[in-house]
Structures are given as structure tokens and as C-alpha cells.
Image (tube, rainbow, N blue to C red):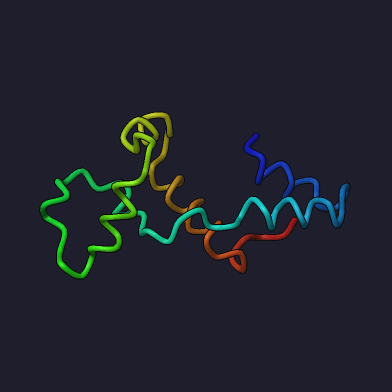
Length: 93
């Protein structure tokens, strides 16, 4: 069970501690769009408007393709990431 789901399922049991844990686990780690992080095209194709994004993406140290391969459903992974970016959309259990 992923940590975020654990704390969501145990909100009633742990109360404030679960709320704090959920809040900390949903802090965005980056402002780079998911499409940009997981793009398979070359960085040369980036537009001039995306210069700051391409700089941030070049600083990423993990292999996004390997990450995607470990996930059974990439759409679910993207949905979960977007929910973390928007705390208001996370259902409270």
C-alpha cells in the first residue's frame, strides 16, 4: 500500500497525524509538466518558450522510462500525480 493511500485510509484512526502526513505527501516536487518529464522526444525539439522547463528537466536524475515500466497503468500514475498537485481533488476517507 503506497504511503499516501495508507494515510488516507487511516484518517479516522490517526486524525490530525494522518491529515499532516497526507498534506506533506501531496506537496508538489516539481512544477514541470508530466508530459515534459516523460517525453521521449529529443530536447532539441523543445520550443523557445520552454527553455526554463528544459533546464529543469535536464536536472532530473531518475530514469522516467524505467519508472513507467514499473507501473502497471501509466494513466493511473499520471492521475495520481495530478491529484498530488491538486490537494482539493483528493477524496477524504
